[in-house]
Length: 266
Image 1: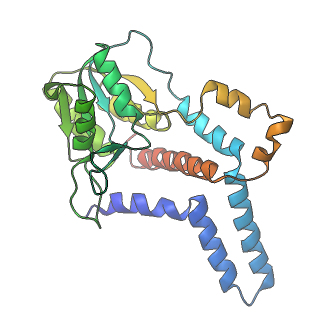
Image 2 (image 1 turned 120 degrees about the vertical axis):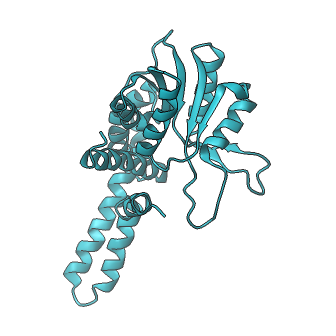
Image 3 (image 1 turned 180 degrees about the vertical axis):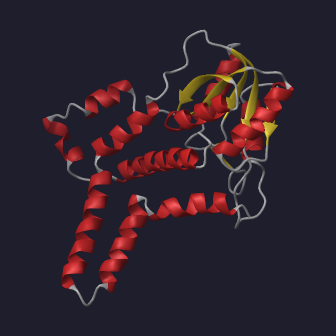
């Protein structure tokens, strides 16, 4: 088992809102000798859930990531679209096929670029990190399966099945791309992930064009969010679980950028 990969997935859960709230509530329960400490832990837990469950803090963090690269310019093309791993649900009962998951827009977008003639091949990357459930088909193979069902010919699909994180994926994909003498690529991934992905491939020496997709907030939704009305007041007072999930996604990405910079990958 790759312990860096394992810990990079485990440790953030302890500082996400739910994990941190759990720790604080547990600390409050164990603080039976100090009422003052108990109140402090409970207050901190309340504030974390409340603030992260509100729309604006989450939207601001997310928006800052999603606007780090503009949408793909009209007419921009490249020989290969590199599609970062993710966005699938495995073919396991009761599912009747590999299904598109929450980040699956990247597969749809890549297929669209192919059919528009803006890329000649699609490169899907990613192994499956499943230390407890045993061996599964790779993420790359699952993405390729969906792309074929979307009409992309098998001969124009490349897969890389060894990488377990974005840094490994950029390095492994780079080997394939260099063997093909590819210099310019279009990188397709979720908008929150685009900054890290683009810069990793630039560091590998490629001319990179960003193609973000799976946006959390459209321009119109951001405008509505920053101009509250009398009818929408409750959204700014009562926390919602969807905001907490989006907050976790943004924090995960910021942590990823920080760790990659510390390790010299960015």
